[in-house]
Image 1 (cartoon, rainbow, N blue to C red):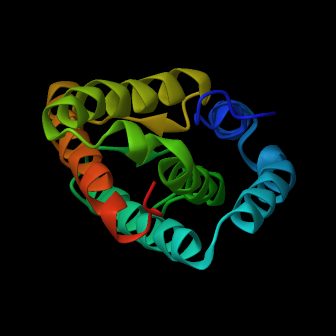
Image 2: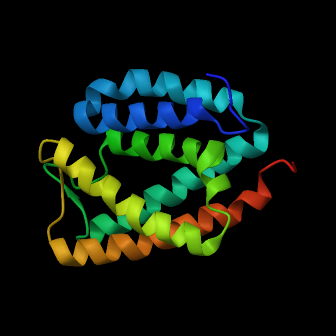
Length: 166
């Protein structure tokens, strides 16, 4: 898919398809999503690949903490399931490919993160067949709103370390 006025439409569509496949089909979506992830990483330069890895590791650390704090839980799992780890990987790829470019203004990043992040979790919980859950609804909502506002600001500001000057 060609880029229109500098926006990476392939990355947006690819991320949304991977998100839906992983949330809805979970383990059955692992191989196609891995293939997409390898392709996306192949398109990036070394700095972009390192940024994806760092965002992935930070995201896994954050969600592991959220799991330990009973903000989120997975039925039958004490750890993050593989499909959720892959969800973070494709999110990290999308963050580097297009999201961070949109999040450069901290106030806008906070608004988009505080709304988009929690909505993704809630939508994912609804589509996951009960696999992703929120033990304490209000507590989970407040924590996710604050955490995702901060994540979005960090993503927008971190772009200066890996993005090529335009």
